[in-house]
Length: 517
Image (cartoon, rainbow, N blue to C red; front, side):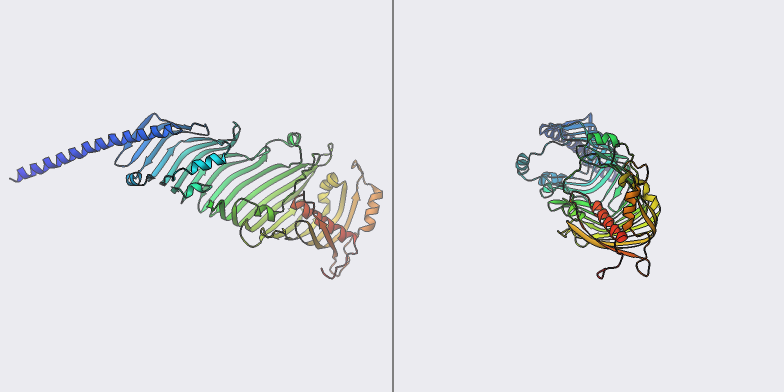
């Protein structure tokens, strides 16, 4: 009797398993058929999709395509991938809400290409206005060994090229609200690693880096380069107006707490700290090219006008080098003015925030004198007010003679024991004061061909110049200055003409401290 009951239960169990198996097979066949139809239907809307093999699992909600190629009818987007797998498809959301939910979307060795076409506002706005956008919810997106090439509008010239993309992006959400943002989706935690990146910055410069490692908490960029596409002489032949030749390399950039995403109608970038290690920046200017007479924004306005809500709490620079040289004559090779051992700190850098941006730098001028500069400004101040203070100590002035000889047909001798200056100004004018302690400071005006000293002009100049700073009890001479800005020149030109005016008044004036100093 017991054996008969057990046999009956086994038969029922086998029949149930058989029915479930048949239903599973039927469901699998229907699911595969539905997926193929959906992919074919998608192709008819403008996406040309091809794949060698498809495999599905209805129970796991998994769809896998092998050797995939996809492109749109306008040839703006292309994709080639070894394998694309979607897992954890949510059937309830798909049936009830006309949306898609996935636990994971994985792309193996994808190669993306993109050509941006001209944006047609009217047609795009009409298209976007038709019906609600379907909701897409992806818990995890994984890209392994990806590549990306983006080309300039309607051309084959390369704009962006990235190799070795490994990306994991979590909690991706696209819906009717996010579709109206500049980045049409929201996301959560992420990790991104790349091996090589090249970005075309326009007709004259490019950006390149060897490796990028990034997540929401920290990031590193290794061997970043920003360089001119052409050599100095070749660049000059291509220019209509003056444009600097750049050569910047940064050994390592370190980032902390990066947050980038949409905010209202713009984009937001938040960064707790950015550290630049061993930057080397060479700048060359060919003054034989006609001047660029466009208005140059001071940094207040440049930040204020950014189409980006920027906030960087702290930027640090360690062990940097900056060189600058100008070509003033065809037959005279320019010499550089050099700032080495550069350390700098910039705090509260922002475009829409509050408070002052503060800059503090320390460097060696010509590898000899200790130069310090403190500078502050408020980006929200529409008068573009700023305040700068600086000092130079223990400087043998002969070190700068190669630069002065080629740029000013002049030389100096003597030592600057200590120099202090303070200046404040706005968009159009500035003023300040200086005090200087120096020994045997003397100017030499050179002949036009720089073959020797112009004794007459040198004698005239030194009639007004005092060789030693012997005015006050501490050995300082004092000076004041007022300067009007040339608005087609940069802030650093503005800074230089203030310092130059202060030097002239300090060395050639009566050297006495004014009451308001």
